[in-house]
Image (cartoon, rainbow, N blue to C red; front, side, top):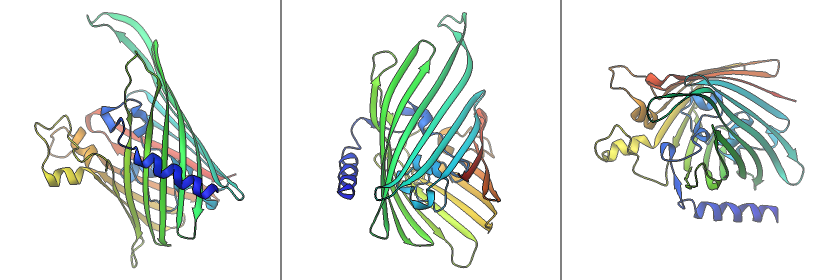
Length: 325
């Protein structure tokens, strides 16, 4: 009964994924697109098929949660564009006979901002923040599949304006064998319950498909992710016209690689072409969209670092700790 309910909900939500949904900068609650962990940050920002991520991966694909996530807790912190502080707390617990339950909190504090009116007059300062609380449930189907669903409650406050919303996500993971995983997920399907100024805005919905494969003769695990699959045209503010076919195709793709030097040390590299095209400055060497990170494990405690460039706007530096409690 539980299995059939999960599948029915997933099919219904996936079937209405094109209803009032937009991607990235065209939507509200854009903080939901910030990479959820140092691992995601360094692997292109959008992976949905990772093999051994921490519980924060449920924000990208709730089907990731399984019995191996039982009792695991992850915490990460990042400085992002000026004085913004970002935090993620995620954990998982196995419910016997039901599935694996996950819970997570995401928050952004933008610090103290100057209030300047339309005439350029300084009107003092104000504070701004975003927060989202997620509950997820995942269950194994047969031996090769896992599927999961999740819901977020969202609250956003900017000076005297605030908004609340709800978002749903769902996903499936297919484990072809121990060295290959295929993941499919949708995220941020929902709506505002209350808007900032009476005007309803769309959430940053995304539909993603990914494959992670460990190479046979090299200690390297590659991750390929196709994102924004519900909308072919990925035009950026830098474009004077619609991008050509192959340019558009590349913008849907993100790639990452994990060098598995040992159980205790990993080096990660990634690239997101859409992010590069959206934020590049035209300089000869612009590393926007490129990510790098390391993971160290010592006495059961994982310490991870990830960095992703946002060109002239700055960089996302993210530090994470995960362990089993």
